[in-house]
Image (cartoon, rainbow, N blue to C red):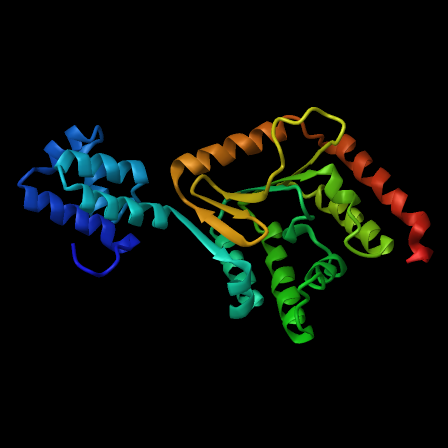
Length: 282
C-alpha cells in the first residue's frame, strides 16, 4: 500500500484494486465474503459505506497479508467512528459547530434524542441556553452571543413538516439548577408547551422507576444512519450499523419506562412549581 492514508472515498476503490490484483471476480469474492455481489459492487464504487466487519470479510475473501488487513481495518474503524475534542470545537468556533449540527438535523427525518445531563438544545429557552454557555470554561461574550443565536436558529426545524422528534429526558435533569429558579421554571414551561406539537414526542424518565440501564451519556440518533454521543471531553460520531443498532435499542429501553402525555406534563409542572417559591432568593 502507498503512504497516503485511506479515507472514506478511497477504501472502496482500494478494495476493488486489491480484488483486481488477485484475479478474483466480484461474484467470487462476494460469495466468499457472505454478501451479495450487488453490495460488494456498491462498496467498491463508494455508494455504500462499508462497516469494519464488511472490510474484514472482503479482505479475508481476497486473501491479503496481515499488514494490509490491519491497515484497512484501522481505516474502516476511523471512518466509522470519529471523536472531536470539545477544546478543538471551541478553538474553531462553537457557533460553527451549531451550524454543522443544524445541517445534520435538517437532513434527518426522525430524530431520537436521549438526555441525562441537560435539556436538549432544540428545546432550550434563550435564558437557559445562555446559562449553559456561561458555565466554565465560559465563552467570551461575543462568542457566546454568536453561539446562542446559532443554537436558537436550530429550533426552527421543530416546525417543519415531514419530521418527527422523540425526546427522552431523565427526571433529574429537570431538577438541576443550571441557573436561577425563574429561568428554570420558564424552561420547564417551554417543555410543556413544545410537548403539544403534533410531531413531538416528549417522555420523562422518572427517578422512581427501575432503570433499564445507566444514563452514561447523552446521544442523538439521526434516522438509522448516524449517532452523535457527547462525553466530557469530546463529541463522538458513529455510523457503524452495529453501534447505531445498540443506541436504538438503548433508546427504546429507556422509552419503555418513560411517562408521556398528561402524566409527563404533571411531572414537569410539579418540578416547576417547586422552583417558584425560591424566585426571590437567588
